[in-house]
Image (tube, rainbow, N blue to C red; front, side, top):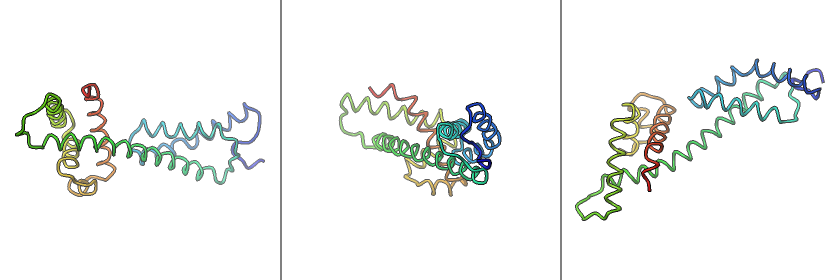
Length: 185
């Protein structure tokens, strides 16, 4: 088949065709992934994942549909990454919302040892959000968790994209998790 991009040929010929395909399409695929993910490393990983899967796949690609196929693959890979991150974010959001609501709770009743420990953690989390996160990330985290604002509300109020709101929350929660994971016990 002369009009295919990667044919059933010897390994060296297949490697050469694959290398040419990689070089010709990597930039376009990376830009697409970066636009969708907003992170250089994640975009590079997504493109590598698509090419790794393509390398092990036995289907023959036609030149006239290769670009469309690869862009569809990278889009789908990025959407899977976003869905996974959103699920992780949902779990972390629920955990942080619980911690922050406990911090705002009335503390006029006697505290047990464990609730005193929880209070200390909550104070430390609030202090970390105020002092260690960037001002914009801190603002976004507080608006979402303290004021119960939606991503859309935050986006409109701060004049940033929904993607930027998501990025600030994901980064903030990732830093919080990394900092406080050892204090849970």
